[in-house]
Image (cartoon, rainbow, N blue to C red; front, side):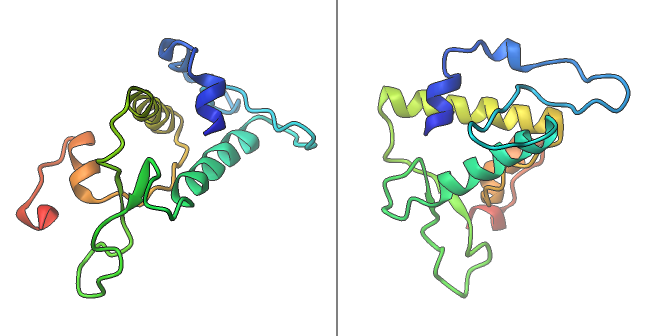
Length: 138
């Protein structure tokens, strides 16, 4: 994940920027796509998160950081197209990448950007202060 390589040494505190006044875009960091003529700041920022989402979900080997949930193909189960954090990825580097993803989740939450990862309720409900139900865990 090239974003991790480029941002891993930046203090997370630097990504908690105050919301700008007026009509300036609210972004946590500037994104520059080399070789592309993109005007503005918010467009490349949003595109970064779209590209990152696609990259995280494109590894179909089952070895990615985020993998298809075990019930992904079961048409009788609600949430059939969800993804989960890969429980077998536990190296020190993997844990750094998970922490980095958490920082990016925070950037999205603060700036209103979307990281399009279809994660199950058992993952996101605790993050937003909602209680899990039995149905969320089944």
